[in-house]
Amino acid sequence: MEHPIAVVAIAVLALLCGMWLGRRAHASQAVRRAGRARRLGAEGERLGLALLARRGYRLVETQVSRELFVLVDGNKVPYRVRADAIVRKRSRRYVAEIKGGRVAAAVTTVATRRQLLEYSIAFEADGLLLVDAYAGVITEVVFPARR
Image 1 (cartoon, rainbow, N blue to C red):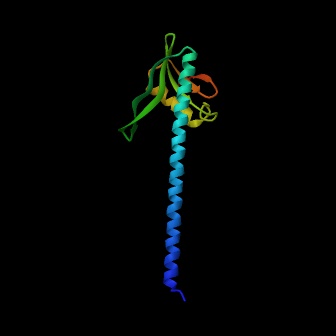
Image 2: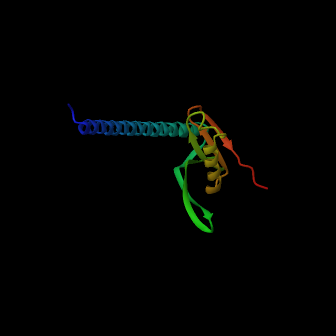
Image 3: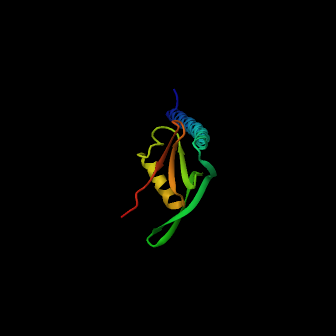
């Protein structure tokens, strides 16, 4: 006859091993997804920059960051924003945000719209461009002046 304590100990050990293996598999899957997202992002950015060049925009700078701040209870809280590119066409300077995929590349997507709004504050530019790298579409976005 087996010892009940030994059976429970083996069951607990098996459960812990299963949980550990499950977490390792989940972490490994997350790393693969993140790597894929980085590769797709880099490919989308390359395609987006090439699209801008074909449409007559001249690249000034990529991965441009600026520091902004908000006041929280009177205290200055800094944060950084980073745009994909600054481009010029004729005498106008634009901040370009390059996206891939239908959802992210739509101005109706909350995160994208907020990102563009931050760029309108952070960068001294004549306009904002939302570039859908995979669809080959460049959209100029304008936020109306407040009254």
